[in-house]
Image 1 (tube, rainbow, N blue to C red):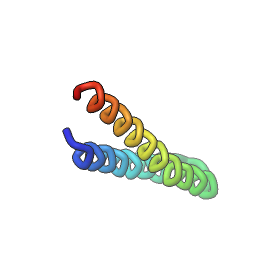
Image 2 (cartoon, helix red, strand yellow):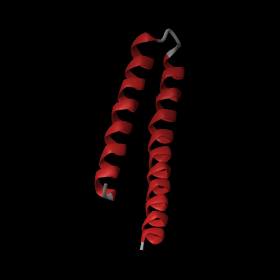
Image 3 (cartoon, one colour):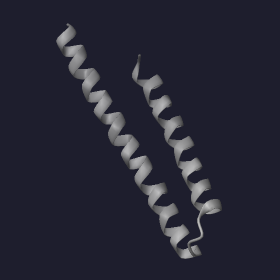
Image 4 (cartoon, helix red, strand yellow):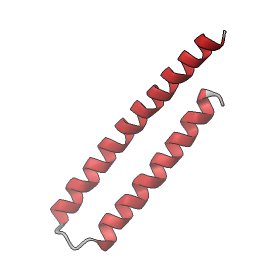
Length: 70
């Protein structure tokens, strides 16, 4: 698997999980509006950062694998 395909899979998974989480928070939670906004901001900031770190980790592992394979 090449890095572009891995990045595409991680990105699409992250977008889908973020959207489903925000949908669940907005429509099924009885908390006031300010709590919903804070949780939404946390999701919008934390999920991309976590996914990019995960991508960098996979990239690092693949580079180690390529070095040991040669």
